[in-house]
Amino acid sequence: MIHKFKQLGYNIVLDVNSGAVHLPDDCAYDMLDFLDAPMTEEMPADLPGKLPGYSESEVRESYAELYQLYKDGALFAEDDYEKYSNTMVKSPVKSMCLNVAHDCNLRCEYCFAQTGDFGGERCIMTPETGKKAIDFLIERSGNREQLELDFFGGEPLMAWDTVVQTVEYARSIEKQHGKHFRFTITTNGLLLDDEKIDYINREMSNCVLSLDGRREVTDRIRRTLNGKSCFDVIVPKFQKLVQNRGDKDYYVRATFTRYNLDFTDDILAMRDMGFVQLSAEPVVTDPGEPYSIRQEDLPRVFSEYDRLCEVMANRTEDKFNFFHFMVDLNAGPCAIKRLRGCGCGNDYVAVEPHGDIYPCHQFVGIEQWKMGNLYDGTFNDDIKTYFSKVHVYSKEGCRNCWAKFFCSGGCNANSFLYEGDVKKPYKLACEMQKKRLECAIALAADRAVKGQETPVFTEAPASMG
Amino acid sequence: MKEVFILKHITTINKANLKASALKGGCGKCQSSCQSACKTSCTVANQKCESVK
Image (cartoon, rainbow over all chains, first blue to last red; front, top):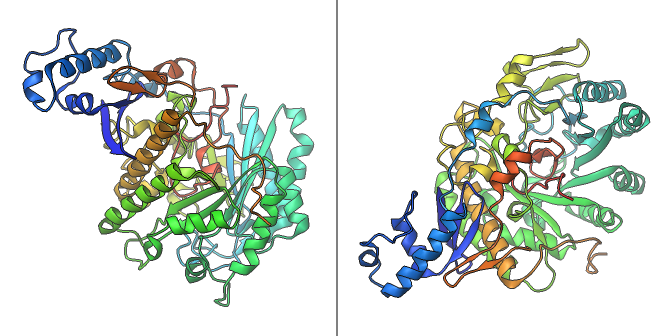
């Protein structure tokens, strides 16, 4: 299977099953409309007649090169990955989203956690429950040495004591168990102060800082409890955190909605604030909400991704990374990882403040997906087994999709919430994902042609602070 | 980007190594994708392989 498309002025061909990316000239690109496996060394006699715009010698040379790629396993490579998916079994649990606060000090209109409470009571996780979560992860992680825990909410800084006590507990016992914890935190920044910034920069390998870009965009949808702006409070704190962070990962992460389909301007606004690791996710919500992104918005969203892609390719100064356009075509994840994706419900779980365990943070509060509880020791193995077998060969439509090894079938929670079935990918998200991947591959191609490396930022840019 | 292979009509910008990665893959060391920046989507291919040094 191949996927051919044009982006950034390049003809691009992805050979799905080998992972090879080719940039053919027009003749070879057009020829691929008439070819499939198995290819023969001798060019089909009717091929020149199908390509009247090209000379016979061009057609012959192009065919010979395509045949060489085919013989090398880089074109029309066979899909023989299903054998691996058939042997998929449960994995050790190695990653956890710890919802330390089911409460928030913002009232963002689009919050999938229903302004922080996930549809239940507002509450904070006790340090005791945080420590039990650490014990659970160690106990369930088998031979995995590297364990991940993301402090999430709600707003996790509202449960700062629990965050610190959980980290300290994990650090105190990780060596004796042969483990290493990698902590991350996702925060709206309102409660950041110098002490918390220092702690986060010391202990958290990554932090996700929520901001929606331009002031007016952020203020429209991310408001305080009394409906006021948070922009001026948050931005200087994020700048200070990033400036002191050294080479550790961070992302300033926006959500874009129907209100700001010109989200490239929000990305650029955040770059102008001095941030270089940037993300903007399309809002995922009920289509009836006024800010939801709908099918009819997709042409506009796609043209905006095109615009962002052009901006990034042509920028010579003040460069930045955009999370969804990052792809390493040589050393990305292995095919086995790509079959199953995020690991939700299998090697990744979420724990809410009372100790209830769910497949991931987006399933929290949905009773049918509750997997167990830290206090009564329950953990539903059937749900874990189910998710261990959710992969691109068991999801509807993924098998024949060119993007399957990049998105791994998409977000299982979105599939359940918006298509009613974990194994039925959320179509709207698929369409946007595919567009983003085309941009990502095109940017990688552009860097390769120009002999550029992927930008690596090891310190805060000079424009900050 | 380190690997670029140039023919007269076609430039290939990477190694076709997905199948080889399956043979040695599945070690489970890599980060869960939702622990990076997304939380509402799923892009796996932008994660790093942590076995490759």
